[in-house]
Image (cartoon, rainbow, N blue to C red; front, side):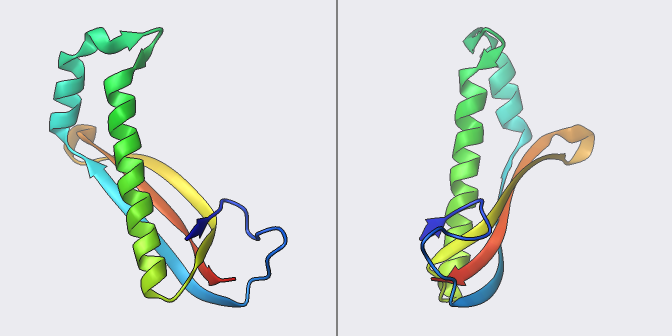
Length: 105
């Protein structure tokens, strides 16, 4: 599966548009509690533990996006947009949402 933030793929023609696909992952409140407990991970204003969790959530969302595109018969997703949102009561959860257009190239 080819994944791209651009609307086209250089040197490749889009033969068919299959539709919009989305992948999402939500980090729960316990992640934040664990992260604050490990505050000593913060070096230079960055938290290695927090970055690991975000990377994991992003990976899950990309896998879900790819699975949905594959089910539609696509072999690429173009125009990918990645969003991070705080959701839940008191902003206790972080959502990673990825969307794009499934295509056949």
